[in-house]
Amino acid sequence: MSVRVALFGTKFMGKAHSQAYRSVNMFFPEAPRVEMKVIVGRDPEQTKEAANAYGWEEASTDWRAVMHRKDIDLVDICTPGDWHDPMVLEAAKAKKHIVCEKPLGNTLEEAMRMAAAVSEAGVRHFLMHNYRRVPAVTLAKKLIDEGRLGRIFHFRARYLQDWAMSPELQMLWRFDKNLAGSGALGDLGSHIIDLAHYLCDDITEVSSAMATYIKERPAVPGSEEKKPVTVDDAVVMCVRFANGALGTLEATRFALGRKNHNAFEINGSKGSLSFDLENLNNLDFLSADDNDDVEGFRRIIACSKGKHPYADHWWADGHILGYEHSFTHSVNDFLTALASGGEVHPDFEDGLKNQKVLHAVEKASRSGRWEQVV
Image (cartoon, rainbow, N blue to C red):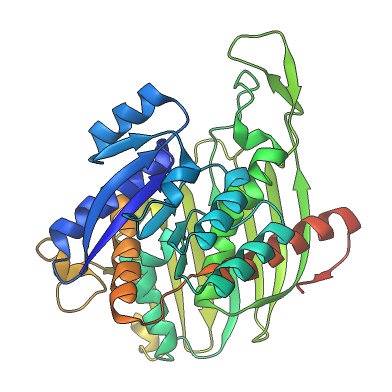
């Protein structure tokens, strides 16, 4: 079986997804073969350059026409958030399977509309929360499902970056609510909310605070003209889970010295887990079954063949993997599910669940009260 793919978006995520499709063809021979048919962007020259650099057969700037091509089975949407809704709706109308970057929509209404559209069209859908498929994170899920942590009491997570701190940084699309939906909340917070759902349980109630530290930015680099920033720079959340656990989640683009610090700790009645993406091959695990004199966190290098998720497809034991492998694993799992008809998550229903939390967080920040996730 082969799957013919069109990718929409030529920048950072477009590059990451493109590499994932190439890597699936090379390292996952049991998965359907990927035909990288066409990449779609706005600038003709830049899109041609991306096609040549990333390995696509063609370049196009006509996204609607590509959606309806008969030689396309799967569309992959790597655009800014304001394009997700129209592109997903068009893809569903064209009966294409869909991979979409996160968060699903810029608003809850958009996410609801997209989830309904793919369900009605009967197409397969996948949301690219790639951190679920870092091998150490997948191993954490396995340990939790096996009961190694017992009853979970606490989930705490933080996603910290510092790239937005300079007031001289120009007005990017990520600082415009109409284009991005939100700031650190959707960009970073959606990832740790997804991990909370994956590793702990559904979030049912939230309390939150949000802040915007730089209120306006240069329209273009070095310009005296300023444009207002309409998204958050930082958010903190207290959450309650359906299983009774409590959680604290923090996302910011103003943590000086932190480049991509996506970390969590989970505490249960029988054990604890700790993970940091900046040390992504390691998972720290503590078991209450250990004798008191040796109890403590043990470090697991989660890349040993025959023992750890995805490791059989890569290098010799202990030869570490990287950020890019999480996209390859995600694409492989979705393509394999397409071929087998099996389930694969996160899908758009998971994305809608995530969007409901994002909506409740913004509501709680305005109200100053706990808000239900509905």
